[in-house]
Length: 231
Image 1 (cartoon, helix red, strand yellow):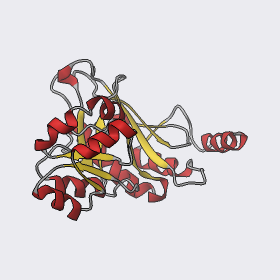
Image 2 (image 1 turned 135 degrees about the vertical axis):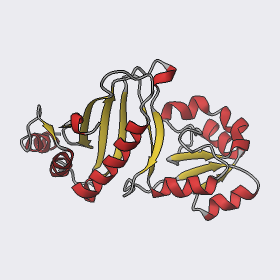
Image 3 (image 1 turned 90 degrees about the vertical axis):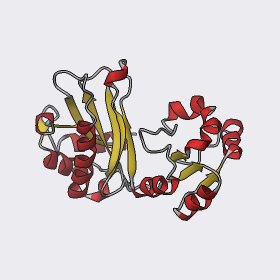
Image 4 (image 1 turned 60 degrees about the horizontal axis):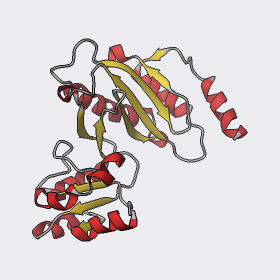
């Protein structure tokens, strides 16, 4: 643990904790402060000026990151008929119906990252809401994971489509890639995500929309981004 503490302390020396950095500079710093032996995930934490308790102030959606997430995504598709082969052809890892719902419920099986469903399977996955919901895995039309075109949803998930949604404290937490991507690719992913969040601004949101934005690697310190330059 002392070693982790030392690396963290060294990272902190590379920047001013209270300063808000321009996006490009923040990206360069987050790569520099990523000192773990593994390829750390870079995450964005965006606090919004909305109240998630109100239905008309929810912010949720999905965006395909131009450079992917750097993670191999496993997909589980609930579908039937012709869509089964289409999903398999698109590269889905698991395709089926009630047997997978049962496996999740009885065996606590979660060997997947994204769940996709065709609308005709909602009766099957409806009963999984209590299990998948808290893990952020429940498919939804808004995120494009409940769709008749399951093949496209699989392709997008594999290409680096991520879902963003507000938590109870009005913050969106999202991965935008790995430290090994470098500042330029991370910035492209960051711009795509922030662009989508800004586009999703609810009409009921008043005042400043993006309150704060922090970048951090898995083991590294948080770096503040100048949110005035974002939108």
